[in-house]
Image (cartoon, rainbow, N blue to C red; front, side, top):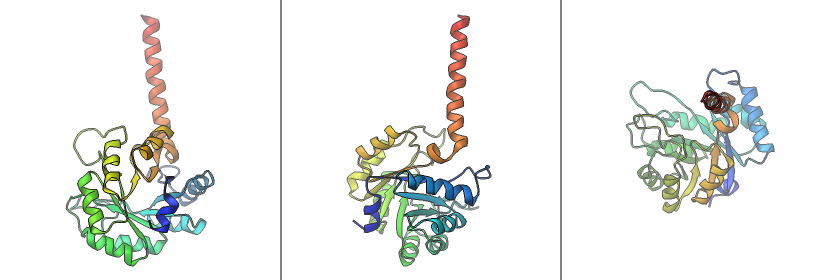
Length: 233
């Protein structure tokens, strides 16, 4: 196992991605989230955008999974979709560069993105939606695979639970597996490791106040309605 992956093994990676345009979408908040996470025991960070990767790298030497979310006119892939973006993340200080590894059409091939990452001295994380993506990414030379995109490619509402079945399938392939996506409780994080993940990424449940408040508010509102209905009954 690569020495960098050994640092992440059996650990928590905190994704410090504020809601775009929200009150915490600034470098000072992202760095604060990152340092607080590391001080509390996180083994690594997942950071979006060149500016925020640079800011966090200036504040810590901890492992950083860097990504760029970029919407393209002609393609649906949006997580580090080009080799140029991958190279830029390496230059900004990312230890690992994550990219969309789904089978969807893309502007640059997976092979060219992997080459750019490895030439830049970083490791490559393949963000997958299904087991076929993971299998192909490992064969192409990805250093680790993640369940990041499971549930986000199809029609209909997004799932609310982690894809533990995919995590287990990925683990059976023998690569370094990073569980990511809708992990919202310590129990779910622990279960992901029990299903074979080597590390777990948690984002919204730690660093997106807007999402956390909406979960609590929804539960409280529903409970209040139920209580009132019972009282009236």
